[in-house]
Length: 501
Image (cartoon, rainbow, N blue to C red; front, side):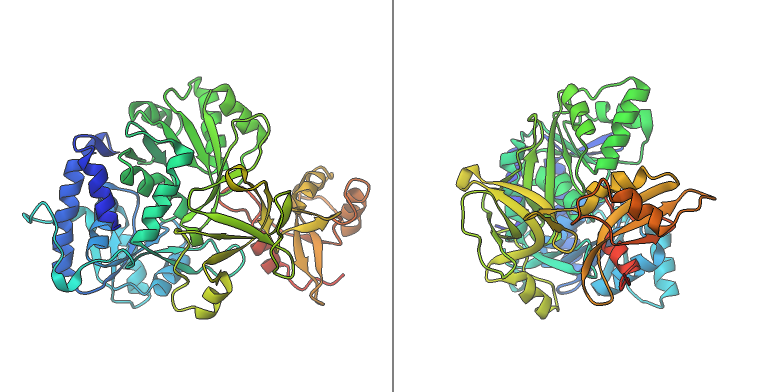
């Protein structure tokens, strides 16, 4: 099924229902459908055949209408994170190889400056100024350019937690199934209203915060940068029922609720991605009677691989999603065939798995074996069929095997931070100059404090399991962290590779 067909189906059942809300104004499904049709005609006539359009945009109604219009004309959309440093944004643009760049008004100057400094001549489309003219309110593509559900319409960029970031390719069909898979865990209704402050360039925000609501008849609430108490008022005024974000976002939100002495009326659930939510935050949401779900995923699967309900007293693992199958493999690459608890390299298969990494055949063959996506993550599976539970442990490069069990070395972090003179600390897995994996302690010292490697190792020895005990200490100015607040292990490894012990 084409995305436009699925959207039209949702629109037909909810014509007067708001598809989105932005700056206090709501746009109905009927009006959004008309806007998409008119823009489809406009871009069909102005962009040429098979354009590649990079989106350097803040979240806005124009992004939604433009994206769906481009899928109608067999164009390729490539979201780019707008808040990166200029050199990283430029690298992203160059690797995307766009024929055009779509921009929102607030980013037009940044885009022009970037292109000018890099001596690139790529046409800019100011999408908030495009209204499609007086074209037909329904779009019919020309016979020679009829879209197909197997057309690749979206490139999402990987996080780059291990290798250099890559683009992952998705078709209409894969995006349709990505939305379908979320129906069961959300139990969403047309009355639901979804909000994320994350930019839609991230696969988690794109799928959960924009694509899923609009393909199921719910409402997409678009953030416009309010902070603190004003943001809480915005949630109430917009009648938000579903909140999506990272652990730091939800921590800040609850601190604001406490400081402003306000609750979150109407919010039914929060979905956490890009890091594990703490036990304390989970308990706080339970007290507010807000359901908490932990989402684990990768760009290679349009993000979502499992959703875990954390409302229960003790987390029991993520449930498998409809249409996906899961397995784990041992270190030799053989299937661990059991219905009992088993841990190993996680592989998934289903209609949402990417087409591959464009122009990277070797890497694609490594990640896709038959129909199975080899995630590069270590996970533990329990049960089978409808009772299957998936516990994500970590990237295979980041975990340590302790008494036959896989674990991250983050249990050492608390010990490191308790050492006098340590401002921040984190343990990570690296390799020696002889390519032997070891646990390393990274330390940020308090100002004017003298601290030696021996002091750190001696402080850890009585409290840390021998297989997790750091074998080396490195001193640094900061601990790199991901958007979710966790340690960015690959950056740590890159910064301190080839350690001698």
